Image (cartoon, rainbow, N blue to C red; front, side, top):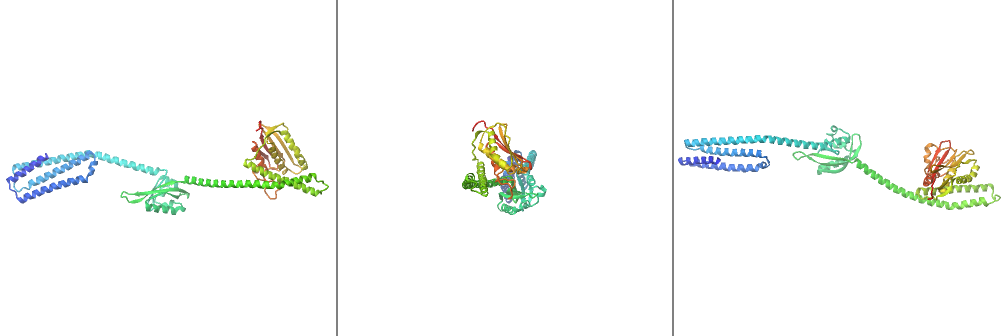
Length: 516
């Protein structure tokens, strides 16, 4: 239809040129105007296509609306040019030409109105989807913003957002709670307010590094809480830009490494303890070697002394020695024996501690064993005017190390003689069966032992009286040795005592039914 209109306009113009001789100048001017309009339309359409590539991404309804709008504009332009050419004719228009011109004008107006109405309809139809699309985009943006905000606010990591001046503009709940502040107390404050005093320079260096390079990663910084407590952290920061890509600050992630730091300290302490333990083991070995060496060296000269003293006491006539000399010999013999026991105790304690004590178990009669001990100690007790009693009555058989059990009883009996009253002392020894154990005990009426010191008596080298002027000798090994031997034989040792009311030492030995 558009081509028909153009053809009608062209025919009318041709008829007017045949019937009327136009002015040459006017004709040239019309040709130039048509050429200009044609060129202008082509340039406009090319620019329209180049500058609106987004049309390819639009939905179909907006596309159609825009196409109809462009088409209406083209028709209007062509009609305007054609009518303008007709109205500028030099001679009066004939009735047929005027009617054709009027009809053409009406047709163009109708086409323009139709295309305009269609365009408006399409725009109306596309308006609601566009609104819905915009609303959905807005909702999606809001959800994304909320997700980001929730992630920021509720993250277990410590987050803070700072400006390029080091001022905190936002932080999350974990950051505020860990430092003991409210968010209102934090926002607007400098990052240095939350830095430990001894790490201010490290924080300043980290901040300058970020400003210079745009990134900080896992920088160890100590922060300070509101209550003054400090905590180790790892700080990582990245740039934050506005919509114009201008740097406005940074998002900082802070990881609390208190647990890691404590674990690291624990490992370091453990390493130090292991090193110290290794050194102690070396020293213990040196001590054991020294003890072995010194006890051996002490025993070597001691045996001749004891031997010669025994010979003098047994074989030298009292007629050849004065009473004073005999007393000296006996004193030498007594103290040599005492030294021998001390050396023996040192060796025994060392063997027990190193687990090298050997036990020779034999079957023996406990009742006869206790009678033997009683008979051997009776002369000494009579000399010291001590009431010495053996209250063992049962017929008992035991399979164990007889020599080591005798060593325990010897220690306990001799220990009791040091603490009982002079000329009024009493010592009782006994062995009784209790279940699958045989319980031995040594009871005295001595000074007793305070409650707070009873457990300590079984520790090596411990003595109740440690003063230089103490009345009773000893090296503090006797009870520790007794306890070690008892446990080595599978039993246990304990005591009962009251200060001023004497002491009873017990030790139990299992009744072995078969020889090991």
